[in-house]
Image 1 (tube, rainbow, N blue to C red):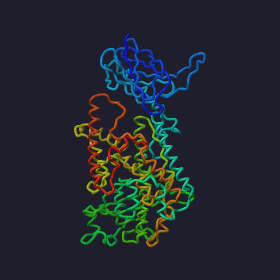
Image 2 (cartoon, rainbow, N blue to C red):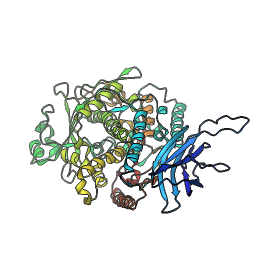
Image 3 (cartoon, protein in one colour):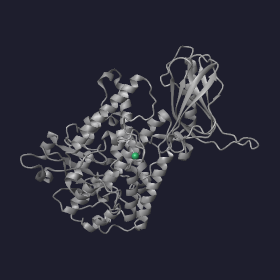
Image 4 (cartoon, rainbow, N blue to C red):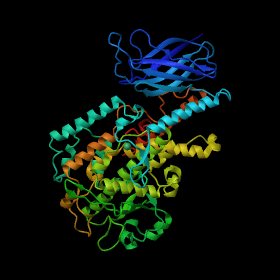
Length: 602
Ligand code: FE2
């Protein structure tokens, strides 16, 4: 008989411990041990515990893997009844064999009910040709189990496939929010809704009478960016800078030739371009940029409070004057030019120009939430996740409160996926394709490219690295860029209106303060969306930053060194970003590595 020491580590979070029976079987090249019970007198496997046991087994040859068994605890006679199964989160198992070094079996999974989990040693290598079939059989069984658990279905034509379940509860606890996170989320949401309910705002379906009233929605929850937006939201400079460093910094592209359906003339923009130049000359010089919301053309709008909402598909032309900030110089609110779709200019009346810019911001909201955030930062990562782990993140509630409604959201995601390419998802190629490599002050691009970088010594595996980097960037940094600033930029609602209640203006000279306020969402609709965006942009209480690896899945020296090098590189990037931000009136913090969740968390 061989004597083994066994050390078990239970997860440290709420509900991780168990009262069930736990045992292990050793599976080796020459046989398998019976289940070896690990329970001792008293309470075992409590939350956060590290416990040691001793077991005896006949020799099993070269150890291939461990089986971890969980079974319900039975009450002693005269009442031989099983207690209800108690889920257990096992972090890792460490085995000290009679000879040789200790072996580490990373787990980091929930065990529910009566079950058996197969664990491989963290540094395990295929010992010999005899053991390969055993390991492959174990792997096949594991995959079949997961694939059987999560079947595919198509949510809507043209959308990515998703998991075929009706409720989050049907999924494995490994892919749920933790109990602590769920409680924190529920408490935050409840307190925000109760506060607004007590102020009478949640039932008020009337339009805003004065924009100053908006400040009472979140009288406590303010951020420096929010305060900056309140102060500067009408200014062209902040309007333009949000194409670079706002919530949706992926649409702007260099414009060498105007689209034929955006007939901006030299006479219109000459006063802004200055003497000695022309629109054609500036287009050739590469100082002109275009943001085109053509995806929104013909998208159906929904109703809120029983009122029809409206969606526009604007085009916005911007110029990058040498040494000065990017600025908008022409806006058309539809894809069809003509007398009913004037081209608005900075020289128009204050309210005409502000109204045109606000329509662009409203289009930006629809594209950001449906295409960029939901489509590219949730549904696409979901495909990656299912393909590797067969898991599903929480459903996204945003479609309920916006102008485009459910069918509009579906259509927008479908249209974006039709035009989406692999290169679009690879930041360096996307930046080159949009012609924005040299656009100054584009912090999203600069910070994103730093995080994208990989060591040049891996060039021989470039294709694999490119793919994995795209997946990691999409599921971490890209989501952070789309998500973390949602409250900052949207809490002052006119800067990022989720919906518009009047049709786009069809002539100049019609807009004024009254029509501007009447166009914006009602009080209760504003409160609904701001609470949702506040919750979605807040870190849910258990942040795991990019480059932070609390679960010790890798025990070998080489990956540990890689992890340390990655963390050191991220720390250097963070230092550079913070140094840059200290000089900016509006710091760009969303891609500072400590602020980036290592996966799509909310
Ligand atoms: Fe998100």
